[in-house]
Length: 83
Image (cartoon, rainbow, N blue to C red; front, side):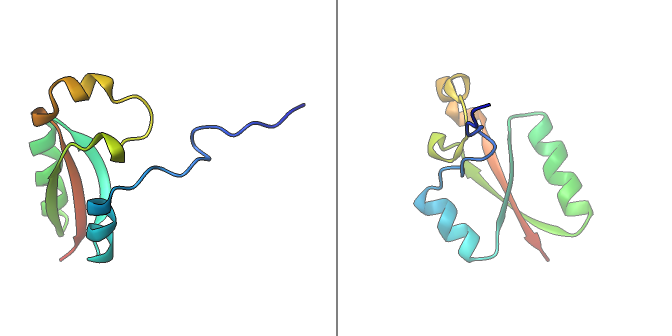
């Protein structure tokens, strides 16, 4: 049997902005568009997290993001940190 690396084993690319946010204590959570974006943001706030939204950046997305790149203004990356 040969062993090959899966996409889960490879580190996710990280943009300069993402690294900056992580140094400030923000943790990348997920990428959504509406209406789910607002629902998830509200949920994180209800359980005591600060929420920060960043515009979609294909550099930060593992795998295929071609569909999202067609309308990047619709998508936001959610970052959280404890209040």
